[in-house]
Image 1 (cartoon, rainbow, N blue to C red):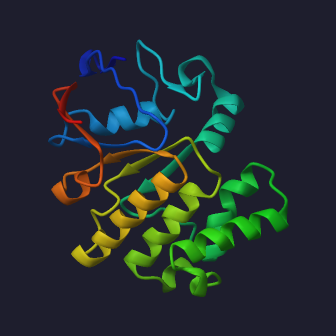
Image 2 (cartoon, rainbow, N blue to C red):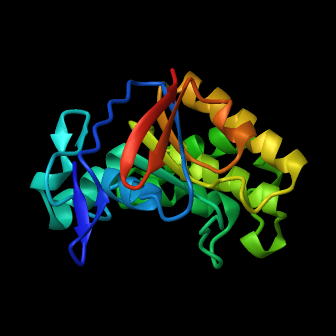
Image 3 (tube, helix red, strand yellow):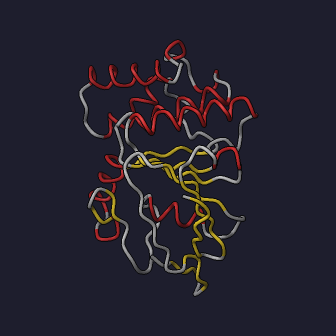
Length: 214
């Protein structure tokens, strides 16, 4: 795929293939195109040329409600600054993707409760995000990203706002849960420690991908 902004190339003939359960680290300097690539993979942005296929469906050929539904079903997101809804409890935040998909309340609660126990946040299920530490907020965000069993998780610097201990715990969770649920993971990071949990690493430089390992 390729993408330009104001006639300046940001992505140059990028080609990438990811399998179920595979973890890919996307590294490179600031301004190299990492965020643009992640946005294209997530259907937030659209390449000028090329396709983005997730589970056989092409994000570049649909729009509107159809694109929104595909993103809700097949993509999970984890952000550096968590992006939890401040007026909802931990459990409600985790349930939210299922609510958007029309899942029945009992199933939502059961699925969210199971994942919160898995990320060691069951005891904080009724707390508001303002009462959580940074590490707890990211655990909640990971549960929310996985609750609808997406095909891929897009994680943008998920440990960039955490200390070393919480960073290590979050990386361990991402590694374990993506493998157990056979969910592909694209991890944008500047951290060597974060990149090491991935089987493959690609570096972006001036809009071009270079295979580093894997």
